[in-house]
Length: 346
Image 1 (cartoon, rainbow, N blue to C red):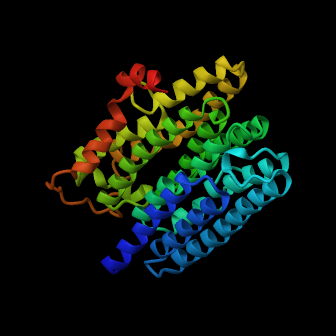
Image 2: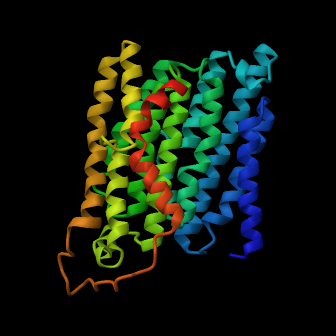
């Protein structure tokens, strides 16, 4: 892709995200979401492969429908209450429509079907943007309207997302699809706590984005798209594969790594809200996700290819690890000791 064109699209992404996050009016928030959608489409379809074109088409249709519902929700609220302010969303029908619209935007169950397909058809760098930056505007809208939304609906969507995200990721062999189901599962954890402690949702999102960025950038460096290619990478970049193992375990939420922090705080908050059974169900369902993270880590670091005739071993690569991967991986592994400071801030 032309560097000037790429600069325009990335600038538009930043503009759209900033516009939605900083707006108080529904029309401005909707405009930001639309700019985001139009800016990411060329980045999805830049390879001109039929699967990439299909992914871009699916993404456009779903996001257009979701943006329409966001605007419809704002208009319905304005019709009944006379308020266009995002934080003044009080009409029950508007709240329900907005929940459905933002669930479509984020890819929460039962509106999740588009996300694995779109991620599978996109390059790894675009997949990283779809999994992190593109989730920020809908989460910001959820944050601003969290006091008005129905906790029962959000809890149901969250539990279904964690369950299906873990369950459907179990039999995948494509790395991008595994990361898509991982994203759906993490979004479930963010959604369940948004009504009770919105700042905790933002903390979870920031840490998730950081860990996902480290994983995607590592996969992009070693050019791995399938589990079978991942198996042969240990000879090429052993140190990077070792880092990948630790970041994946952090993404799974294992102590003493960074990923344990948001899960720990969310379970603590749910217990304070007399929701101990919900916290127990979420904890058990996260074991499903742990299985496919372990599978990825096992393929990356521990196994030899089962059929050496079919898999050529890679030449050892002495190039240093990119500084951004090193910084993100370090943060993804070692932030847990700072949890008292983070708890005090939120």
